[in-house]
Picture 1 (cartoon, rainbow, N blue to C red):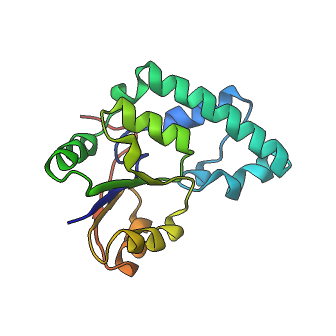
Picture 2: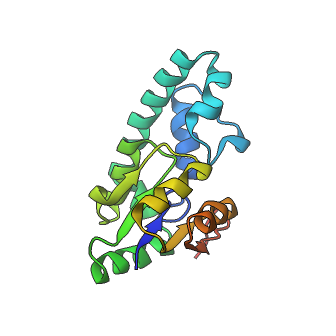
Amino acid sequence: MKWCSDIDGVLVNSRHLVREAYRKVGVNMPDEAWGHPWQMWLPSVTGSLENARKAHSEKTLVYVDVIKAGAALENKLPYADILLSLETMFPGDVTYVTGAAKDAAEAVLEALSLTPGALLASSVSTSERAAILEGIASTGVYIDDRIDGQAPAREAGWKFIWARQEWPWTQ
């Protein structure tokens, strides 16, 4: 069986970390932007695509530093341990997709002792994930914290696990 998981909101409670990283580079991230690739919302906030690219690149550097300094472990969610177990039980059958930048996603996976090389796609929207899942296998299990994730999973013939989290996460 193939497994695929989103990263932010499933493995790590990163919303406040991402928002703070944007604030540190002078960007106030709108609430409705969460879960969408930066290309969909940042150009209108910064005034141009060029400014958006620069702000996103700077934010990613800040975010990766925060993750490497221990924020991923401090904000780890229960599905991180579940995916680690799945990676151990089913080597090569667990992959990850995310709307986050590749460097940021790989930093989170590495910090959580997951396999950075299992990152299949980064900077992708929820709607783009059906094609990615179909490219992995004709069936499997997809895990996402957004209920919107069920549409691409079902379209690809996959089962869907809604990793519903409350913000902030409390254990």
